[in-house]
Image (cartoon, rainbow, N blue to C red; front, side, top):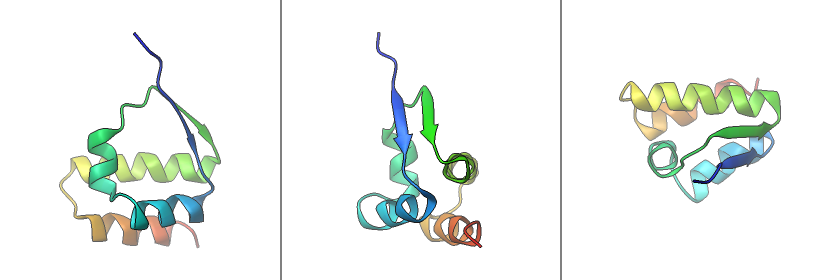
Length: 71
């Protein structure tokens, strides 16, 4: 049984990776994460993304919300 750690990049890079490589919904579906390390805003963004995906929001809605957290 493994322990899945995820080092989350800085907030702007995190959003860029979500836009280019996966989407929020796909990220939540494929990642099994036991612990997150990294920038506190990025961790907050990950929590928000997870909540929004579970509530049924689209990738565009989630990305828009995450981008608003950068300001």
